[in-house]
Image (cartoon, rainbow, N blue to C red):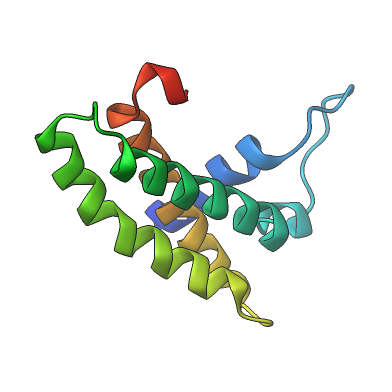
Length: 113
């Protein structure tokens, strides 16, 4: 694993982990993102992108961005929907999902936020 993958794993674990009352070191198992939670996030991102694509008020430049993000979101959804996903692949998908979330948030109309 390279440092970027490790940092992405830790970041996604921190984002996806529920808040705990005490300060505890995470176990190794908690560093692996939860596949079901990632899939739900991925489905929401794809649904948001599809809604934005249909929005007549969305500027053409943003629609072009949406059109480039939809295949990426579909790919992440497809991978996460597989019955078995390797932990290292989950980490990679979590990182891709985080990138997609940032890109979608940057173009998402305020009405859909």
